[in-house]
Length: 342
Ligand code: CP3
Image (cartoon, rainbow, N blue to C red; front, side, top):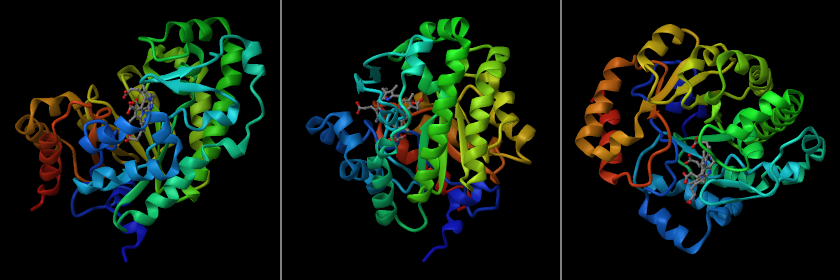
């Protein structure tokens, strides 16, 4: 039996040498897989994500085809929010029934109901761990407080989130109270996931980039830092992902975490040069490259492996894999990473 700490993914997180670099893909259990699309023809996304059995089946799905080094539990960043009494649906992104638009709306949020803190995700982690091979890591995740607030205030995903930015300008105290609640709840949630078998957790700050750096420092940093510190103090390895926010990269690099996960806009080689002594890096092939086919994918993967030092590098895309991605491109990526030292 492999000792969990020998999992490639965990070694890379700790910046220890590995026989080759680990690889996983954001949204690897999703619509580019024909078997996922077949299951989705029978069940809504919400049904899949709220059933521990179905979520486990989807979490494990990509492993029938690809030898990824980590599984990420199939859920959504919205999954824990029923604990705050929040109702939502998906079409395809989250739609919040009653968006939070005032200080009164924030005050009305109930004390967290721990029984509703995504018990299906916790159960799916336990079942996935039992089914996964010993050398595969299991990842939990949550949305960063700001990215969750983006959906709660805006009500849905909208380009550049103007309602959210207006709320931040007109109701900074209410935003502060909302982010504090989300940060405390997400810390609890990630620690629960770790106890259920998640080797590490990824915090997704997909909409980090819509504010300027000074506003980010003033309004957001304290809450993200508090979430990361609480989780770190509990011994949970942390992967911090930010999307479309190159102007915040250095600020994120100063936050407490083990891994900096960046999108394709970032010079990951430069990032590793600057912060590689204290942080592993994860990423960052442009997901659109895979639409260009296996040869384009292989070329991009080779350039990445050439540019980034192997120690402390986890290979991934710069954002979620696109639904129209050909399976041959994923095969080419896996092959290129697996053959680096062959
Ligand atoms: O990465 C994985 O394989 C694990 C599963 C996962 C999902 N959502 C499943 C999902 C993860 C990690 C997420 C996180 C998530 N959800 C984020 C952060 C990552 C990112 O993409 O930036 C965000 C912003 C959300 C909110 C969300 N949920 C959006 C914007 C959408 C619609 C966009 C899309 O991809 O269609 C969803 C729905 C969703 N979450 C789907 C999946 C597989 C698509 C559902 C379907 O129709 O089958």
